Image 1 (cartoon, helix red, strand yellow):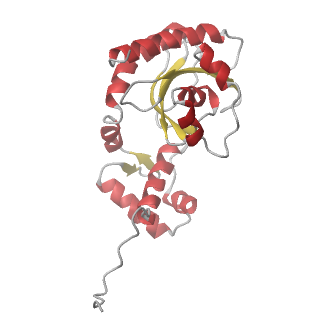
Image 2 (image 1 turned 45 degrees about the vertical axis):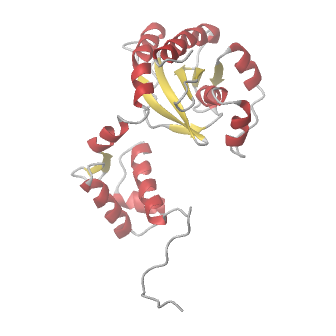
Image 3 (image 1 turned 90 degrees about the vertical axis):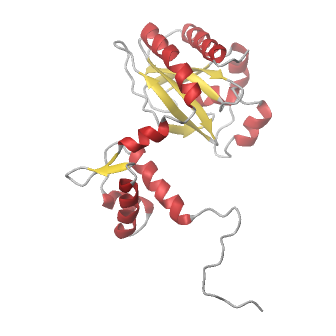
Length: 244
């Protein structure tokens, strides 16, 4: 019989690390918070002792990913931007000039989202120099299939894959068939009350399923006009990345 040397047993293959999961949850909580949280806020949100949250925070500070202000509130640090520059860099780089043009033409916030598992992640945003300003922060997440951007990302997926990815809690979207035919999706007051969005799918081989979208304070608008302008931009982005 093998001798027990007292070392911890290896983790089961495929089992997630609870420590790492908690640390990443802390990082996400800081990035997604409406206002900079305190260590106490983070500890309470994670359900851990403050000393545990403090150790995780100190690790992120050491790597330049988080920082604390003189009041003890926790903020994102420049190291996050350095990491983010490499995320879907080709797609982001190709999309930015077209997002800028769409935003200026329509007077709305234009943004790029990508499908990330069962959620959509805002990857890049351009706000208009003037016009109907609704902020859409990079890093914002919401469920796949929800809102116009979420539906447009679903349209960028093969139908079978969309069904596999769709979270059980997500509603059925019978309107996806119509959106697929016309090439754009629309939502009103769905993700945020008082806010509407129009989005088009963006499929590029080798890239995550994506969508280009605009968001604006709900008011009478011609979604076909907005969808048509976004389709032009999506086709230009795909062409610049070598997609047919």
